[in-house]
Image (cartoon, rainbow, N blue to C red; front, side, top):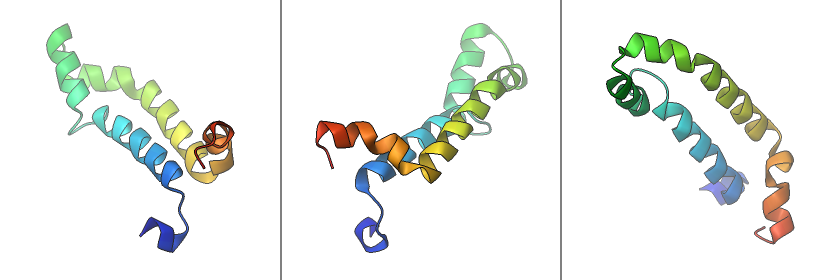
Length: 82
């Protein structure tokens, strides 16, 4: 299906990986938040607020990856993966 829409497999895999990383750090299903809260003896609200700046950076990176694929794929291209 990716080939039918002209989407690069490597680009799609990188975007999915960053999306999953963001999903692990965002409530309500943020597995990492619950684990970190349990280890630090803090509630989910405290941990969620503490991680907000990092989520903003991850979303910015995701936007760059999505809309500027040549910036992301230059290294795999250089290594011969494309």
